[in-house]
Structure formats: structure tokens, C-alpha cells
Amino acid sequence: MEYKTVRINPVRPKQPRSSVLVIYTGGTFGMVYDPKASQLIPFNFEQVLERVPELNRLDFEITILTLPEIIDSSNMKPAVWVELAQLIERYYNEYDSFVILHGTDTMAYTASALSFMLTGLTKPVILTGAQLPIGVARTDARENFITALEIAADVDTSSQQEGRPIVPEVCVYFNSFLLRGNRATKHESVQFNAFTSENYPPLATAGVSIDYNRPYIRPYQADLSLRVQTALDSNVTILKLFPGITQPVVESILTIPNLRGVVLETFGAGNAPTDSWFLNTLEKAIDKGIVLFNVSQCNGGRVTQGRYQTSKRLQQIGVISGADSTTEAAITKLMVVLGREADPIQVRNLLSKSISGEISE
Image (cartoon, rainbow, N blue to C red):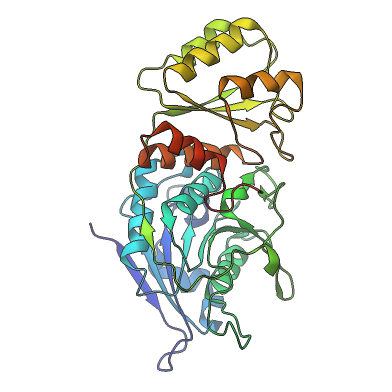
């Protein structure tokens, strides 16, 4: 498969201090206004220095790779996650870090999926994008892109950790905040602060300087080697509860052919209706081998099954608690775990524990 590639080395002929591979998937970030067509069109990254001349001030090498088919993030699919993971695997030994330019609508899903697919990751993978296109005067694209690059290229200068990447995990950088990828969720569509992480502190804050919140960053582990999981099971869905949900609605979802897993979005701390028809329907689904994974509809807090009577029954029939997982992390984790394991006990064990920092234990 052919990928259009642009290489930038601002310090040539000197040796760059680091190398970053940028993968452009599409989205708002890379759009510019075409006066002839009177519309926004995809940006040609061969002209990136014209749009982002600040790149010339960086002291590391940047390679920009564009996917053959750039897409709006609303069209993101597991197949593209597999392609991204395989690209990182393919170039893992050639580059020190990775930045993925991505549309904001599904960025948290992609970040979560990659955090589970890239096992043994010891290099930064930073996703970023923009609320306004790079071709607009007030765009947030430049700051997000440049700071994401700087974070990706940043290494520890302490004597014991010298030369090691500061953030060896999958992250989302947006509007001055670096968030753990599988803890991020999009909460704003018209302001620049598009992403939040209610259940986990920011990994860094970019102001006059970039201040790293080191106790919350995954420690660098030199003995790890990258392994990529590309088998994903998309036979999953999300069932969001609401007052007045009816038996036919619940049954229609839980009887989908070949369904293997459901993220159950419950109220508050994991609570659900106690109507006998509802609990019986869930129990039948579990008996058929369908995995039910409980997360809260609340942005913050966690599921504590059994704390209230309305969640105790869920625990008794075998619903798995997602603790403080986001919905994005829960649904992508289901795809990865079900793609990897057939044994129900193993599936339950993997879902119940933190695989990549997505759950506070």
C-alpha cells in the first residue's frame, strides 16, 4: 500500500535529537478553504511548512505519512485502527515516537483501542487534531500539532532515566492538556477544550513550559517489546439505559445475531431497573455467553456493583463491573479482549482488571 510521505529535518545537516513519525488520518485538522470551490478541501502536507512555519524551529526530524484514504473521524472503523497499529509496528524501530492527526469525534475511541492493541509499548503515541481547520486564521491546529510533536520528542534528562521518553504510552493532546488516551472523552463540540478526563489527572499541562505530572505517567519499562494485536471482534454494542426503557427494546439488542459483548451504560454508581423482565432478559443473555460490561453514564465516578440494591442483582447474575472506565475504553476493550480470548473465564478476568491504565485499581 502506498503512503504519501513528507520528510522535514529543520536542523540539517546537523543530527536531529529525535525522530517523530506523524500519521495523518483525516479530520478537521487538515482542511483548507478552496475559494474556487467555495468549500473546505483536504490539505496537501507537502505544503505543511507554508501552513506551519514554526516547524522550522524544531530540532528533531519529522516524517509525515498520509493514509491512502483520509476520512472524517465519523467514518472511523476498527480496520483503520488495525492499519494504524501495523504502521506503528512497521516503523517502531525507525522512529522514536509517533503523532497521529485525527478527527476529534472519535479520537477517544481510537486512542483507547490503540492503548489495548499496542502491548509492550515503550514509546509515545500522541493523538491530536483541531476544532478549526488549519486553513482558518483562528485555528487551534498549529498549537495542538506543535506541542504534540514536542511532547512526543521529549526525553528525560535525569541521570538515571536519561534519554528515555517521558510519556511512553498512548495519549491525547488537546488545548494545553495531555490526557491518557483510554481515559479521555470528547465533551465539547464548539469550544477548544474538546476533551476531558474526569477519572484520571492530566499527564501534562502545556503553558509557558510543559509541566509533566510524572506520578501519573506510566513508567518506562526497558524490558518490554512491542506486540500488536490486530484481531478485533466487532460483534459488540452499547445499551444505554433510560427511564421508560421497554422490554422489546432491550430484547431486540440482546438478541442481535452473533452478539458477543454489550457495554451496559447504567445510572450513577452502576444502578439499573429491578423489574423482573429486565433482570431476566440480562440473565438469559449472560447464559447464552454474551458478556455484559457495566459502566456509568456519569462522566466522573465509578461503578460499584452491590453498593445499592439496584446494582446488587446485576452482580449476582454475572454482569462485569467496568469500575471507572469510560464508554470509549469499555467498548474498545471488549473488541480487543473478545478478539483475543474465547475462554469466558479469561475474558472476565481481563475485563475486570486494568490492561493499560484504563481502570483505577
